[in-house]
Image 1 (cartoon, helix red, strand yellow):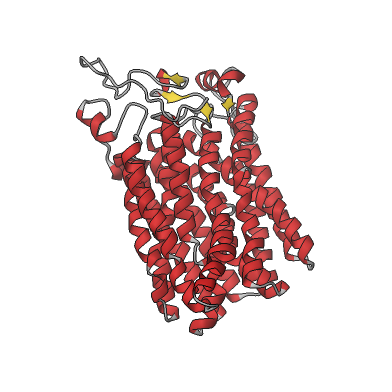
Image 2: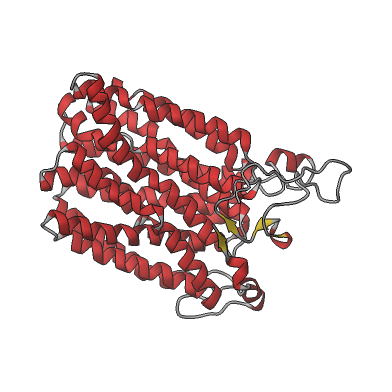
Length: 478
């Protein structure tokens, strides 16, 4: 039965020793981990835990949708305004590159203000340039437009921070992966909805005029993004015990220094190893979101609509693949501790790199699609496994570390995008594949205090007690 209409009972009288917005929860929680949930009930919408879970993935989904709403239309835009392949890739690089700084900023801002407020601000802001897509008339205008739309990509940080804030370490890998994966799904859905559904529909409205169609169609996702940001702000909570401003007012939560939080995360070597590895999985996904439709149109002679439909398959794998990575990480953690999480991530990265190299050599359309499916599965699973490790690196600076690692994804997209801008598809894919394989080897340098590494060290007694929880407490109830 769904909990969509159930709300935990607010604290109505007296001032408890520690203030809480809710006196009870509709989900199993761990009071020793700040009332975080120790289970995931996917069919529940109850506040605060599951409401935040669903708001997090939905906001990230919409952010991804507007971020890449223009991607399946790029071939039409290129032809109508008379720009080159290099100009198109410049706009794509700017679109993902502009998000790097924002993700660095979002980390400590999450620690200080919480995810809910930041989601509203980013979605409402990014919806404005999305609605202005129709005014583009030059390569410079396209690059500037995508720079501002790219701010939406910073929502990944509050997405992962929010789920880490709501769920215990035993299930946080799965929670983070599901939120991130279902959010990333927006990258595949936008290819299909914008390129294969709304664009043809708008062409019908304008009597077959494709230019008028692409100049107006982006108003639709812009409206949805604005409405989503406002709605989520009003119906959700920052943390299990309430909103940050309420918790600070009642002394439940101390004031947080954004600068100190960022400094602590940035000085941790593990953060930068994960930064590089995330560049080689999420950075690959962002690059494919920009490249896939163009690749299948240019290399296999597909139409705009069919190329967009094929490209959408890559993003659709997020429906389960990233969650699979997080789930595998949690299960390996229960059996082997941190060493298990690191091995899972390493294996997914290695498989991803190998499949990119195979994809680069595939000459038939059917085989290319088949290889892309397995390639995409491992890309997203590696992303989920990465954020199964992030909450352990330095729990007090989780927001900042999430931001830095998340920025790694955009950094990777910029680097790989430059390759696609300057080189042939085959050479660009080969560089991508070998880079991913190299990043997998870097797992030997992950050494988190109190936890085992890939080949040496061991989890201390306290960590083992936390990690080996009964299987029923890790259950995901659908």
